[in-house]
Image: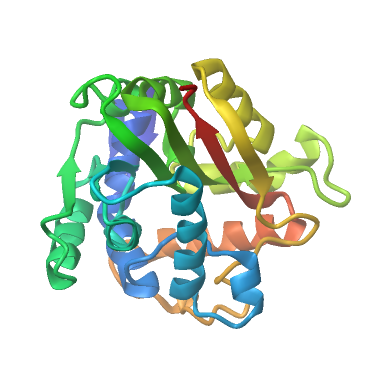
Length: 293
């Protein structure tokens, strides 16, 4: 998928792939996210948030739920797709005793993740690789049936060909092993029930944050099933409530005050996400899908 787009510096990009746009987006969003959220970038467990746990603690609680569902054990190997600056991949290796490889198509992210793994004394069990923009379609670097878990945390939403990733994940997993994931979704909520009513809120999120299309809970489940998985869990993590997570409209994290490079894109992202969250049409979901044994 390609098109004639403007990059964040205002230059015209001819025949730029969506994947390249995402890589370039994280050239500036990566440092901003790192400054504002630290090592853990995904939403957390709602019960943990309501209990007053920090965003990092709540994120770890949700990751632990996914690790336990996958049954990752010492001596196993997990692949974390879209591993960002490495927080969740390092945590996964730490609590499971397994080896975890995180992959991203942005070297700045991978470098930060390696540094974090070294700081945590986890470099021997948590490694981070920068892969090609479209390697997600095949995961060809891994042999068939070689992995004990594939995970993703709010990263597949950036892929234009999500079904190809699920097919690749099915190939590389061992029989009986799990794909576990957390991702952004669109959904009907309140008075916004049709696609026409949802689009004015979700469209700007997709445009500003380099997302080709936000999927739904059921679309992900259907793609996983089509790839061959048995889907054991598919749930909206914020059922019947607005999905604010650790980024409430009072902006305690300071998104509106961020003054780094390309800060207007970060400010715009906060603004359009707030609108979609307030409308209720943005949420986050989790899935557990097992390759039949």
